[in-house]
Image 1: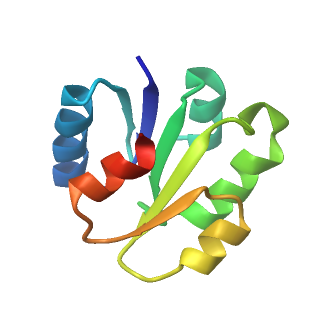
Image 2: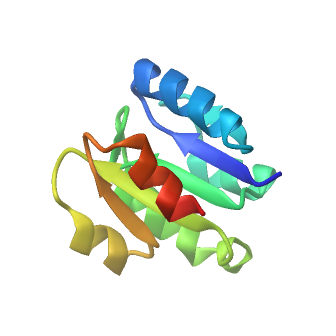
Length: 113
């Protein structure tokens, strides 16, 4: 079962995505807005990660840079999401994909499969 780490600060989104992804056969680990995201990536060793560009008071772009600096995380497929079109910045910092919010759950599932 592929593991997905969810770094999103909107509780409704977390609930909806967790339910959907579990139904699609993913093990979902949801982080709260104040979590140490790089440490969670290291300990959970997810196959995929969905991270909001603005997660609580943290900057997802900075977190992405830190995560990608660690060679152990090279295999993690990271999808960044935001209500702003910051696709270029996300891809430059090491994201595999970018989703503009609001996105359809099917768009996320296509990227993950």
